[in-house]
Image (cartoon, rainbow, N blue to C red; front, top):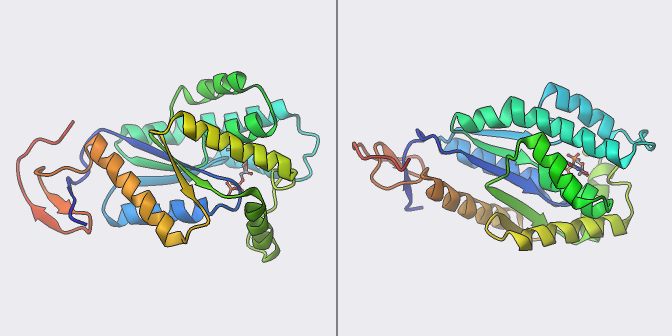
Amino acid sequence: MGITRAIWDREEDLFITFEGPDGSGKTTQIQLLYQYLRERGYPVYLTREPGGTSIGDQIRAVLHDVRNTEMRPEAEILLYSASRAQLVGQVIRPRLAAGEIVLCDRYAESTLAYQGYGRLLDLPTLRYITAFATGGLRPDLIIYLDLPVEEGLRRRLAAYQAGGAEWNRMDQEEVAFHQRVRAGYLQMAAAEPDRWLVLDAAQPVDVIQERIREAVIARLEKVGGVTEGHNRSRTLDGEIIQEGDGEGRR
Ligand code: TYD
C-alpha cells in the first residue's frame, strides 16, 4: 500500500469505537483491526464495554444477568456509566495520554442508542450523565456496523444455539426495541458524518475490514501518525524505507 508512516513516536492519540446491533459482527471486525495495527507496529489497546476493568467486569455480570428482570432503567444507565467511568479513568485516558491507539467495543453511543432511543429515556439527561462519566471524552471515529434488526437477531440466536454466545437481557427485548436502537444509531451518524463511518454489516467480512482499514489509515494521516519524510519511515507492510532527521507533525 504505497503510504509511508513514521514509527509511532508522537503524542497525538486516536480513540476509535465500534458500535452496532447485536449480531452485526463488530467484535470480529475490531479484533481484525487490532491485529492489523499491531502487526504494523502501532501501539494499540483493545477493550470493551461494559467491562474492561476488574470493577467493570463485576458490573457487567450484574447487567447481563437475565435473572435481573427487576432492574430499573435508571439503575441500568448508572451501571453502564459506572463501568464506563472506571474504564475511561483507569485505562482509556492513560493509554491515550501515552500516545496509544485505543479501540473500544461499544462506548457512550451504546447508552444513547439502547437506553435513549431503545428505552425512550431522556436523551439530554443521558448525554449529561455520559459526559460526567467520561469527563467529556468522545471517540475520534465511531465505526457503526448496520444490519436489519431481524437479520441481527437471527445471527445472535444462531450463535447462542450453537453454544458460542451468551443470551443477555438486551437480546430478550422485543423487535420494536431493536428497531428504535437501529434508528437511533442512524440518526446520530447522520448528525455527525465526520465522526461516524456507517458500514453495511451484510457485506463479506474482508470487504468490511478493508473499508475500516482505509478509514483508520485516513485518521492516522490526519493526526500525524502516517507521514512522508519522517525519520525511520516505513511502509504499512512494515518495511523500513528511510532514515532521516525530519520533523514529525506534532
Ligand atoms: P455484549 O455481550 O457485549 O454484546 P455485543 O457483542 O453485542 O456488544 O452485550 C452488550 C449489551 O449491552 C448489548 O446488548 C448492548 C448493551 N449496552 C447497552 O444497552 N448500553 C450500553 O451503554 C452498553 C455499553 C451496552
